[in-house]
Length: 243
Ligand SMILES: [Zn+2]
Image (cartoon, rainbow, N blue to C red; front, side, top):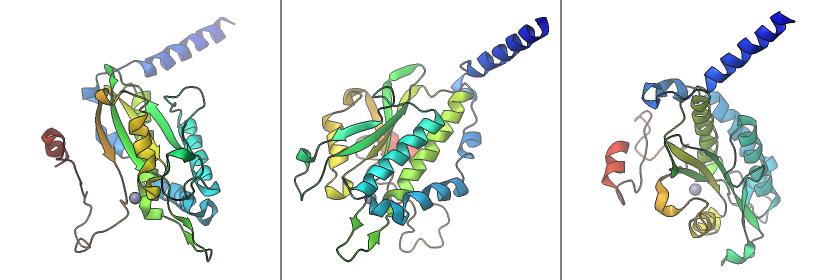
């Protein structure tokens, strides 16, 4: 009996130690970046952009499946929603759409609470909707636009979660924001900024990811590269950091 109690005690001490916050400066970002692998991205994307998701048109069944997929992945990773409990969806009502007849839809949100500056928020976003199916039944799978950015966010979220589990919680909170209605006129992202879950005055930056599967014209032999848009608009500091 004593042995069992001691053993249980030892296990709980080890478990506690793993949760102890550490100095983020001591984290090795490469270790966590290496958890983002081509094979995991491919696994996600081959599901997310499959015919089963029917081109993820806003408000349609394929988009609902995509939303459910994202929620399930965040739950599996143990990353909570800022909306509380198991509600990962910010409802975007059909009434906010001005073009065409679009049904109710939803942004999908998950977040990691910061350690020393939790009230400051970095948003990492992408749109997860695409064009759906045309009148002839052709499915627009949207693997690049923007399945690629969406599955990248899942992998980035996983890397930050792993770092948190090792005691390296980021100083600021990170909101993973998967927006809907982009192809209907940037509606999901506009809805979020009109109805922010965290005050925009405390939102320090938004990195939006779109079409990272694309290789630009003339860039075929460039190797890996990042194409930045707008990073110098509001903050030269962010631009310099990105460069
Ligand atoms: Zn796009």
